[in-house]
Image (tube, rainbow, N blue to C red; front, top):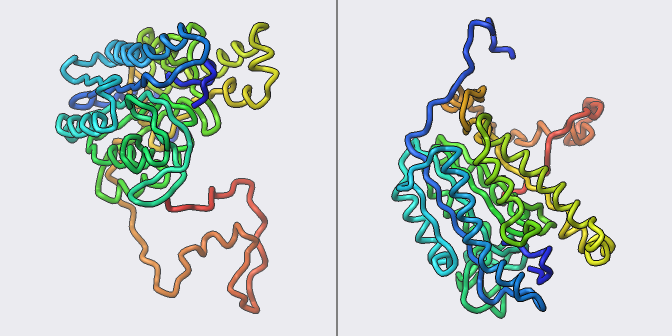
Length: 367
């Protein structure tokens, strides 16, 4: 939420006879829906630079236009399946209504892409009556809230958990979320530790989340100040790609964003204000978008031509046998070998196993 212009967001085992086999191509979803939203509030200004302030206020509309044009070209979207909400339409209430309308439009088997462009950051907030620290999206308001936490209590701004809950109501088979927001990967845990719960409702779909900045990075403008940098590069990739998939386009836009931003900060005229100030540099000059895509959805959204599909549709209905632990069985017994082979203290306990090179991720925090 800095007022510095550079900191502000706009923001082969299965291949038996390879030569005789054609590339596997997934059937297209029934429909693809796009909801693109952005809010550039009037109270956000860049002190001493009215032109930059004007550009910032126009950037949300520019970004929404760019993302719509990109996806229309790449995925041949029907105008009837595109929804946009900008500024006064992108208040917290407007965003909630847009999710409800999207939920009414989409059907099982459809694909949904949601793009959200707002100011934001990781702050003290309130979610369902509990005080938490979470990534917060500053939805459009006519006046800047005096108390950011209170804005989440009032519902004027939305925590990432609240946005996740809205998304969980969407029952489409494929869901792609794109967050063009500062520090937005601070909200990664909200999706990572909720994902299995969503599938416990017998949802058979896949979800991918694109974060345009890490949890300690600003989402920045292009050098002209007219578009969010990642949105500009990603949209151009969508418009110009003749083959490949969404993962290819994302990965290229991500590394181009990182390299472009570092190059800008190392220009002679920016050395004193950006490069030399290490705190500013780490926040404003190192942007590297990331994606949470556990089941390869981005790989399977094709842009022209034929690309090799993942095995998701072969395996999505797989139901492995469920072993119910006995009451006295330790459900975390599998982890003991990775913790030095400690046991309950039995005299004849087995000696500790050698620590493997690859260890399981953890600990697991059930957010």
